[in-house]
Length: 78
Image (cartoon, rainbow, N blue to C red; front, side, top):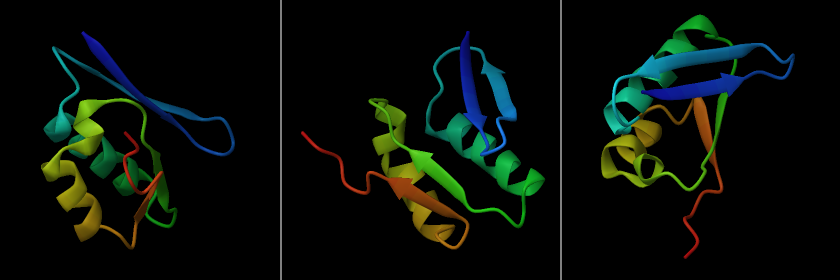
C-alpha cells in the first residue's frame, strides 16, 4: 500500500492510496485529479527521489500540460 499526497499553500491535504507502487500511471491520475479540483491553480511538482518522477511517461504528460504544471528541479541531478 502506497500513499501519494500533496498540500496546497493553505495547508489543505490531498491524498490517494494505491495498492502497490505509485508508478507513473498512478501519479498522472493523481495529478489529473488535482488539476480537475483546482482548475485555476498551477500545480508545482517538487520531484523527490522517486523513479516514477523521472519516467518518460510522466515527463511527456508534464510537457503536454505545461500550462498547468511546473516541475522543480527541472533537471535530475546525479
